[in-house]
Length: 154
Image (tube, one colour):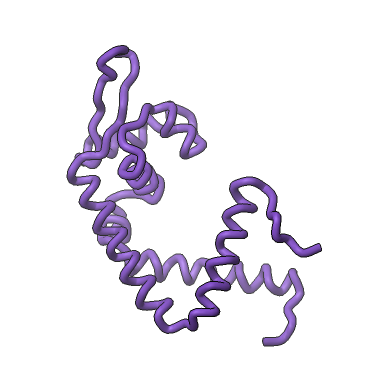
């Protein structure tokens, strides 16, 4: 592969990413692809599935939105049966959000579909390329999360 300037790289990534995201989405669980739930709703379900019950404040912080915005999102998840609200036994002012069985089934189905798709796609790529791709994705995640990258070449 010939050398690519950073500007050319940015343009190529900008062109390729929507195609990749669209195809990943197309192969995912029907509920996401058919618009039954949104990506933010799914991220909340996945977080609740891994963390257990959380307060509205904790969910809002996780999603970087206000608690008012989170209330609207959670209302729709409650209405559709993906989560339930529960009062904190020691302080009834605190409302905890818990994933329902229906929500946990959806997350499990999505994760199984995603794993199968990753195995199918990355099974066609060499072990070295998979390791390089994972290393690069982890660097990108670190830059996004912390704003820095200890492995950056100067």
